[in-house]
Image (tube, rainbow, N blue to C red):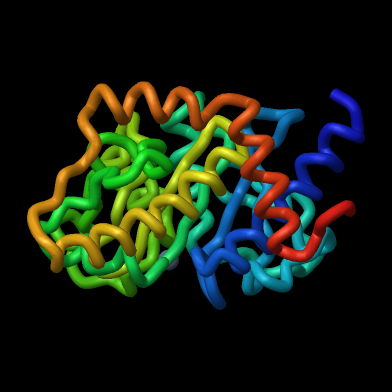
Length: 240
Ligand SMILES: [Zn+2]
C-alpha cells in the first residue's frame, strides 16, 4: 500500500463531497465516506462540516466503531455509526453516502414504492427497503447516532445498494466511491421522475431482468469513469 493510494482516495473523497453538493443530493447536511484502502477496518469521513466546503484537512480516519484515529480536536459527524455499521455488515461495500434529498423523502413516508423507472437508475436496486427507527427505538432525535441504530439500519439495508430512512432520508452504498456517488445521484433523479410521471398515468418500472443487465453495464469501469469525469467537471474541477 503506497502513500499515493491513500492520497488518491482522500482526494476523491473531497471531490465526492463537492460533487454530491453540486448535484443537489446533499446540502448543509449529509455525508459520504470511503473505506480505507490500507485497512478494511477503518474508513475516512469529513469532520462535521457541510459537504460543499469539505477540504483535505477536514478528512478524518475512524475505526468501524467510530473512534477517531487522530482527531486533532476536530468534531466528527453525529451519524458516523451509520457508516461503520454498514462497513461491518457489508464486506463488498467500500463507500457509503447518507443524504436527505428532498425528492426521496415522500417515499419514506408513504407506501408509494421507489423502484427504478429509467435505465440509469437500475443501480438503486430492484427494491429499496425502508428503515423505520420507531418500532425498535421509539421517539428519538431521528439520527443514526449510535451503533445499535447503525446495526439496525444495516440489517434493513441487507444486500441492497440503497435504503430509505423514514422521515429522514436515505443511504446509498457502492463497491467504490465513484459507484456510491453514481447511485446517490440517480436515486435522487429517479425519485424526481416517479413523482412527475405518476401524475400522468400508471407507472411502468424496469423489470428485474432489465435492472440486472443495465445495472451490470452501468457499474462497469467504462461507465463509472465516464460519469465521474463529467461530475468532476460539473463540480468545477475539470483538469485538476
Ligand atoms: Zn441524516
